[in-house]
Length: 170
Image (cartoon, rainbow, N blue to C red; front, side):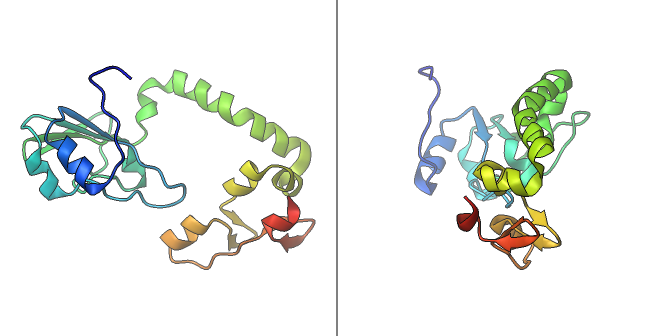
């Protein structure tokens, strides 16, 4: 990384310390299927320099900054306590052609597996596919999704018409 880029472990002390120094804060937290944890609170904005910018990439999952709210490409920013917020949902949409090519290149091998093998066999043969199944046959099969929406979790995937534990099928 360049000398002017700091990467740190995101504990409360380090985040608050770095907020005092930062001109730009990029919040990018992802817990698949779950809401992003809020790492920067409203009171933390007082630590920042007036005119500093927060980009909350996690806004699609609720945001990792307490003061984040979804915005659009047409009206992308707002100011709270002298801090500029950029919280556009679907940020890749600003470069639609490029982001579409990138997404297709990453997802096509999985689509090909699913088309050739079917869901059950593909999931049994590839843990990445199995872990991407959030719901099947009316059951929530992703722990984070179940917790986020307070629904019952089923730790099974469908294979040949029966639900088997993923550890039994891999």
